[in-house]
Length: 615
Image 1 (cartoon, one colour):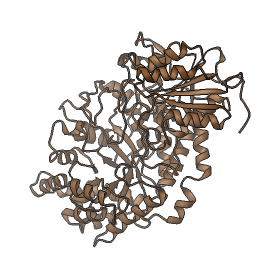
Image 2 (image 1 turned 45 degrees about the vertical axis):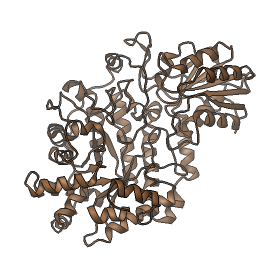
Image 3 (image 1 turned 90 degrees about the vertical axis):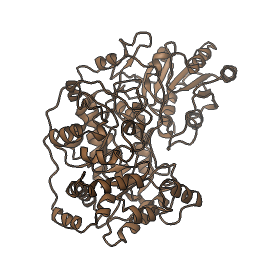
Image 4 (image 1 turned 135 degrees about the vertical axis):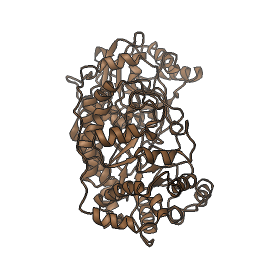
């Protein structure tokens, strides 16, 4: 979960959330579906037998590297690589450490545009395949869609997981995976760290939240399985994360060490359900969580380093024999108890196959090498993981077709049909929570001049600006005269006053809210705008729990993220061009009594009429 932006929210009782989802699930029987050995096993084992120990160690690592090119990055990226990795380029990283995988990040300047990404991928494959025992590379990224994306436009950007949960369509989830997978594969990316299989039952979860499909484990399981099948139909390895389940924590494992207090029985009924579904769907890889789960292992170790969890439960009980990859080894959750030299060794002893993005690849690589040389790890143990990794590469067709085709990038990535599918999908996810006095849709009466104010959180990939600007532009295209006035996630008194003054010259106000809390200045902004007498529409652009803190708002939509595709859909709902169809995939508790549910799973309003024609 090196991959996320975070936000804060009020914390209702965890017991209330679990109670709100009670009755929605039943324990599933233990899956005994182990991945069968492929016909290539004899060839792959022979290949492993010819590898040096250093090459074997390298195959276990998936590493970051700066730059848009495998051989000629910009000087600033060369400097960053020398500082953090000790090499100048991706090609030198492969030459020195024989890494079996590379992960792309936006901030590492790996993902400027689709053609550049394809060229980078091809440069990486050339660097690896050109070696004496050249092997194809697993090129990976976090393309969850919604709040976590690494590849932006002109690639197609879809609604995030909780939005898809609000739509509730397995067909949409599979189509998202199929299209996104096809575009990633066209750019040479063959492993995606998605979907998120966590069941988000804690509204205060700062790191999962809208990255989860919802709070009903059976519904989450259905959508996880569907998305897995979509990605893997496009020959991209899907990755269910974060095992054994990160959905009930108020601690971000990037910065702390979360503890999950679920009983073993509750884990079976809640957290395990989507992972079992992913395994039945033939999931290629599963990512571990840097969490402590005493009911599953009372040693105090994080799950990433726990043999009882990864071997005892995931391998033996759930019957999973695919690739197990750690979450980023640079996160605090896995570094709290052991040093960076011990973490990779302990992860392998626990049952991990791929070691993701250690803070120092040199320290981690040499630690594993030394552990084998000194007998703490056996070479045969490494061979087990390498066989799984090579099986995955073979299933993806990388031994015969590792390279991206430049012409295919133009034909596949960000096509009009793909973007239209994303827009229609977003329309099916937007959720109308409140609509007193039929305030929505706007424009049926005299509300033509609209002021758009509110939050301006840091923009994820997939946005062209703050939510206010995107909403304002979308409403203007729909025939309104919309003015955008960002006020921020913590608006000052001066910003609130400017917004209230501006509201006097408009017919209605749209407010983008972002994780509103009881003492939030966002709440003060909404209350002051309501006092003007102008119609006020709130659009929750991240967690749908904001409505609990805005009890006097007469109209509220949940968009589930502030990416363009979700905000454009919200604008079409506001304008009445489409009727909202989304239904809450998580319960919303009362702010004044968190033990009581304000809006249950499945709540959502539609327009009985008032659909406005037009472009």
